[in-house]
Length: 359
Image 1 (cartoon, rainbow, N blue to C red):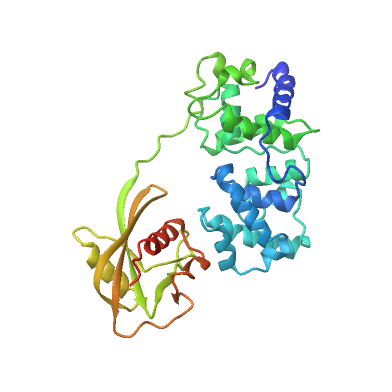
Image 2: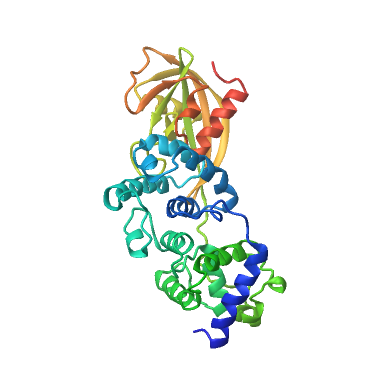
């Protein structure tokens, strides 16, 4: 797969480049296994620039495995709110509990033990093992897979399990035993800044002479990935029910999307249904009736293959307010953001307050 020259040149050239171009990261000074576990989990499907402020805030609140393991899930979700893919937060919480139970509160360094933890796959296990524990284990994120595929002019679909396994094993053959963490981080940084997805900067790439895709003029057509599924446009309506200066919020208790998060009562708008009719249906879903519903704010967001327009309608409660339960709360507009809210709901809350939409 690799020539002898490539096996020698690629690690050397990459590490030389990394010495001068490494992006500053909060784990460079003290790369503990726990810090890397949290950071790598956050970095799954999320860019570094987005993650860093959340990482700092999360670690201030949960500085150790024990702090995270003993926290309530709702609080963990609150400190994760805005990062999306909330199953990552729930898995990290469960992983911390298992680390306390099975490993005495110490994150293990062995990749096979790390992969037994909830939410920990090849990338996260590799990042912890190589960066924090200096084990020669690959840690390929999207950037890493792209670079290795281009270096080898690999023309298979890199989203397939068998393709990823081949690229993973190829990386294992060239990762240096004396600097595995730097090597993996160098791949991530090179992919983020030079060997980018759409416009690779091959003329300044330290690996250009080793890259078969560049030599064959295929760098913009590789790696091969399946076409993206077209977004389906849908509309949701949520009802902002006010009583005694407080809003009614409900907790999502089912499904993977936003489970454990709080929101206004919300429904998908059906064909032929008006927003006001949908708002009445949302209120009825929690045992409330409302009148005089008016559109107050609109936000747009994407989830999986859906492009969603989310409309908030303010309505006056008629009749007695519903009682609070574990899944229903009456909350002051200025206390709402103390609950874990999905990003679009957080944007709605701010828009409602900014426009003085509270009745």
